[in-house]
Amino acid sequence: MTLAEKILAAHCGRDRVEPGELINARVDIVLANDITAPIAIQEFRRIGIEHVFDPKRVVFVPDHFVPNKDIKAAEQAKILRDFAHEQGIVYFEVGEMGIEHILLPELGLVVPGDVIVGADSHTCTYGALGAFATGMGSTDIASAMATGDIWMKVPPSMKFVYHGILGPWVTGKDLILHTIGEIGVDGALYASMEFTGEAIDSMSMDGRFTMANMAVEAGAKAGLFDVDDKTLAYVTGRARRDFRAYHADLDARYAQIWEWEVSELEPQVAFPHLPSNTRPLSQVGNVTIDQAVIGSCTNGRIGDLRQAAGVMNGRRVHPNVRCIILPGTQDIYLQAIAEGLVQTLVRAGCAVSTPTCGPCLGGYMGVLAAGERAISTTNRNFVGRMGHPKSEVYLANPAVAAASAILGRIGGPDEL
Image (cartoon, rainbow, N blue to C red; front, side):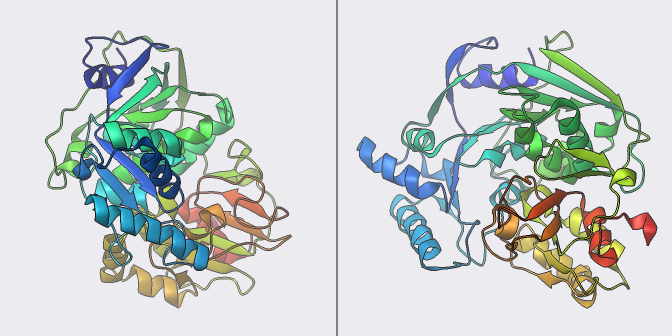
């Protein structure tokens, strides 16, 4: 079996599952945020069950519009807070919360071999830990909160093999953008993507989280990595539960296998208005920008901030550009302060925010006006994603975003 099939089989009490089968599977973690949880809570009430199946396995993270940006956001957050206190579930208040998909792995709430469902499409991020993690609608999440089970179809698996060693300034963000550019935003529709190869073996956990995060941008149900020594080193000391790591069989059957030699791959930039509209940096041309955003559940980890600060050290953001930095969690924020990264970024002219999703979904902390362009380390650049429908968002890795903020146009660190 493939990695996804092994995990799902173990969670439905079966020796084997096949793609296309409908199964009931036990879940390890159920997740929701300040946008999606209120709907799930409403549906949970309608079911008529008084308590969630296990308060230690239901997690609420208000991260999209908090600290509250307006009255509506405050009302949404209050619904979460009240339900969390009533049920005794795992809940993170402002001041301790972070971006959900960075926070949960950091705190060891998700571990290898888990099945995790979240009312957020980027729940697939946890696949970096060798877990089957996927997004679901709020009604499905209400059912999962009540029963601890989900009903789903076993996805087909696709393997993506990356040969070679990545060059300077080329990251997991570039691999996943290149992949989506090659296969399209529906190229892995409802499939489980398994990432492997020498480039993956040498990649940091930060890079793996970024790639798993954007599996959904290829239409995937999940994006998974094998559990290796780097995974175990990350999990050791964090995990709050015992876990079992699963591995794909050598003779596992895949619906499709893609292979690339990536040693010569350039940093990639996704042009509006799809993550698949990618170009290598050398073919971007002269694209001026008004804003640069470095953060989000895709690229708000400490390695991303180190990369951005390294590019910006001793330089200044272009006078026509606003540069916004969003650390993924409070611990990452503190670490960035301790390492002097925040000082470097502020001296360069950046605005550094408390952890929040912020402008990624056009929420706040950097919404775009008509005609404005932003380069961003976020995961989507759909029409109106970061503000006005006539604005434009270009996706790139943190080093490219930082260099572009200094140059006033999309460009790379080598130009500096």
